[in-house]
Image (cartoon, rainbow, N blue to C red; front, side, top):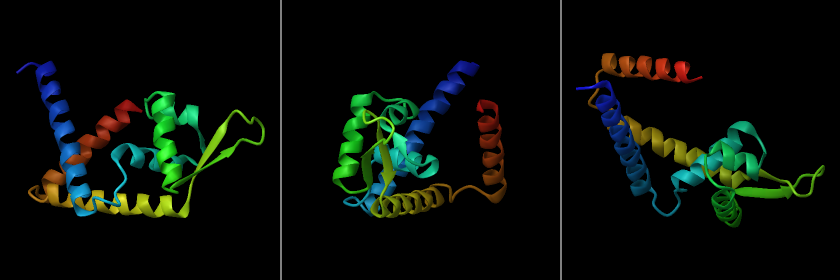
Length: 142
C-alpha cells in the first residue's frame, strides 16, 4: 500500500474514532452535553483566558459568523459571558462562567471515560506505543 493511501486510511479511522468518542459521551448525558464545537470554544477560552470573537474564529478554523452562532448559544446557555473590551468597544471579550467551567469538566470526564472504554482492548505496551507515536507527531507539528 502506498504511503498516501495509508495516511488516507488513518485519516478516515481518526474521524471514525472521534465520532465513536462523541457518540459514547453524548449517549451518557445527551441533554447536558455540549456539542464538540461548543466544547472546543469552552476549552480554548479555558486554556487561553478571555478571547475576542475574531481570534476565536481563527483559532477554531471557522468563519466569524459560525463562531458568533456558537458563542450566542453558549452565552444564552450561560456557559460564556460576553463583554466589551474597555480599550475598543468594537471588540468583544469572552470568558467562561462557573456553569461553563462545570460543563467543560463534565465533558472532559465523559471523554476520558469513553477513551478508557474504547482503548480497553490495548495492552499496556500498545498504549505506551500509541502515546509515544502520538507525542512524536505532535512534536513534529509544533
